[in-house]
Image (cartoon, rainbow, N blue to C red; front, side):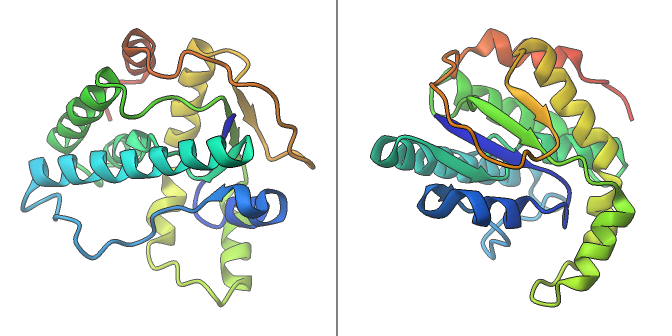
Length: 202
């Protein structure tokens, strides 16, 4: 079973994963120095992030295989990030279209898929801001941009919840319950239906 924990910056997802995941946690990528610039090389950036997302999915599969379940700190299928940036005007429609096409191909090829459960922190922005200020160990230089992503992030997982009912839970539970795999991990028609349910303009 693969469980994803998502939410805006400082929403508590990493703390929750550390508390409940132990050796099952697949950490988020963080900053990668080799990432192409989306403005200078949008096609290169789209291909780069599609491959990094595959890396995290493969890491999740490996943890699942060895321990029975994996807990991903942020979604390996992180296409929502560029879509959310586009929704708030921080990425172009071309950026979104290129990353959509690159990600769609990785699903069609069976290289990345859908998790069995999604736990989406619905922490409000001011609570997240207080948590960010109270945690001096982490620099959150882009907190304000990430805070603006909250409505779009919730829209993304609401669409996923409609297409894959029963997999999404809004709010982080007190405990992690582990079940069986839900199946339907690599279905391209499911992916297309989720995308079709998203608002398609800023």
